[in-house]
Image 1: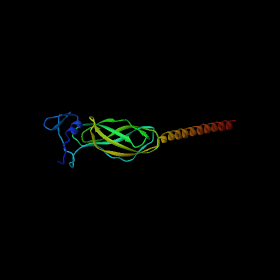
Image 2 (image 1 turned 135 degrees about the vertical axis):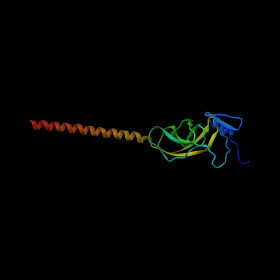
Image 3 (image 1 turned 90 degrees about the horizontal axis):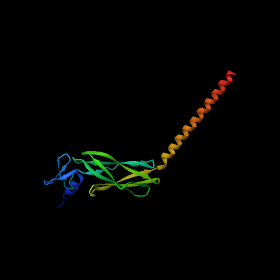
Image 4 (image 1 turned 180 degrees about the vertical axis):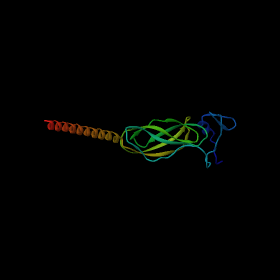
Length: 180
């Protein structure tokens, strides 16, 4: 039999409890039919691959797009695993995805070093069942850029302030010389 019934997965995904009729009851008491895997056009919950992420600070939240094609609210855990030690990520982030929507889950990361990092991102149910295959997101870490920009901006403001003071003092001196 080519098709595998995913009742355990659907039960773990949907907020609510299973009914004896083979449907899953959601919090809104609307039954959702249990779907079979490997069918075309089967709804699911998955990570949407995105464009390259540029991290320019020591700590930030990276966006992970999650799409829910079910007619019910889904609660999942988002796992992010870097391929090297340039960034540190938490074990998991819990996200509730509304029905038939795509959301951005914010996953906190902490930069340790600069360079390119490939992040493996996957979803699991709250019972630990992995949903789909891991998606790879590319990220470039430039943690020192933020500090350098702040120092450069502060230096520019300092130079403009000093030039303004010098200009004001010269004008006052010229006014006193003209009066005398």
